[in-house]
Amino acid sequence: METQFTLRQHGITVREVLRNLSPGGLYEEAIRHEEGSGISDTGCLIAYSGEKTGRSPKDKRVVRHPDSEADVWWGPVNFPLDESSFSINRERAVDYLNTQSRIYCVDGYAGWDPSQRLKVRVICARPYHALFMHNMLIRPTDHELEHFSEPDFVIYNAGAFPANRYTSGMTSRTSVDLSIERREVVLLGTEYAGEMKKAVFTYMNYVLPKRGILSMHCSATSDRVTGQSSVLFGLSGTGKTTLSADPRRFLIGDDEHGWSDTGIFNIEGGCYAKAVYLTRESEPEIFEALRFGAVLENVVYDKAHRHVDFNDTSITQNTRGAYPIEYMRNARIPCVAGHPTDVIFLTCDAFGVLPPVSRLTPEQAMYYFISGYTAKVAGTEMGVSEPEATFSPCFGGPFLVWHPAVYAKLLAEKVQKFQARVWLVNTGWSGGSYGTGSRMPLRFTRAIIDGIHSGELNSVPRVRDPFMGLDVVTACSGVPQEMMQPRLSWRDTAAFEAASKKLAQRFRSNFEKYASAVDAAVIASGPPQ
Image (cartoon, rainbow, N blue to C red; front, side):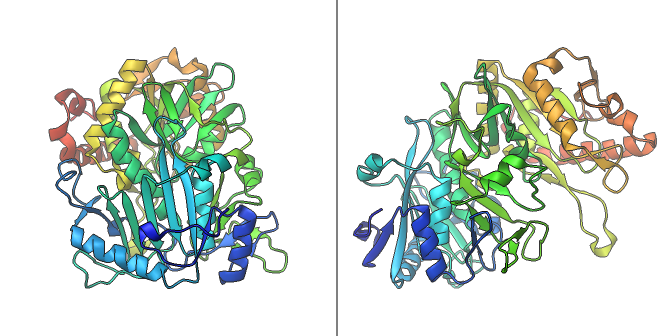
């Protein structure tokens, strides 16, 4: 810890800069200076992010600059921002930070592979934000911190201060601005801590592909005996974090990784797990990781006994816990592993159409990777009860910088070069869509993942699904056979066929926007006409 550290090179003139405080020190700062902060009965720091309890993807902007303009996938994911507006927002953030009596600085690394890691600096005004990033970045040793020198990437978090809506390019009081050339992110108008974590990932999503490394929104585990790894892609709610918390395997990471020619590596130093409806029985590893040093965000707790009610969603459904990865008993430190033998795409299909597990060809791997499909249960507004299809390219659309085809081609190259098998696993509904069928039990999904890891599913007979064109695995130990093929689990065959055709058309319509950037064989690997 340093209290005489200076940030004048970043425009910060506050006298008291608290650099890399210990968790205990940040607890003290939070309790003294942050209204509403508390400590749970398990020792977590409880904090609140204010109005914003989730990311604001529509407020993310990237500076349009001649040096990177041709690289960026401009559009609904990357809204362009001119350099002048970025400078205005940056100065606005610095001016706000300079009004504070104390500033917190966190220096850490992104990327467990020493040859690929970046030095990251976070400058913020809230102890909760500092502890969050202390957990999510890779923590330097005292010696590394002493010789940290200048960072490769800087986050200015002035989230309590709004953007000026009259600044060119602003559409709200929130703005998350990335300048690739300055290697900086400026946060205004949002105190949701996850914006910092994803700002680092977004920048890595630009840097790593330039080096021929696939950046991945996935969890990763490795075999305790052989060291062979697997990666699990998936959008929120598909089981990416839950399924990687497997005590029989080493945890490499739960969310962000790179795949280089030497293997895979975690980008982060911690985990950011959903806490809604968490129980010790359902997810013991995550439950036990929420202890002293961890941050619990936007949860409701009993002020008398400090007991957290994980079932109370009155603040938000997006309650989360952030903790160092070594808090997971099965974590492998350092968080690196060999090349994956299996690449698994997780999808929560609320239409009940996709089979529990399918084996994908290399072309299908690109198709379903670019599609990034899952389905969310729709609300009841205006009588709508049908699930909502969600397509997020590469299972991480909001964090992409390059066109999705760039990441898909890198994936195809890695899969082919290192002979990885690719699977599509449905963690969603079986026996009918939402409202008719039932959610696939977690124990069955775990059995499928075990069957993939053990090699059992490599030799199981497969049948072709006529609507989606998938090679459906027909048997798996620990899973009722009638559940393995959706057609057999639906009582109403006509309803199944109608739902299948509808989902297939959704895939085809979504993929039209990417067709010009991929080979004809990839397009043909999708659902047949």
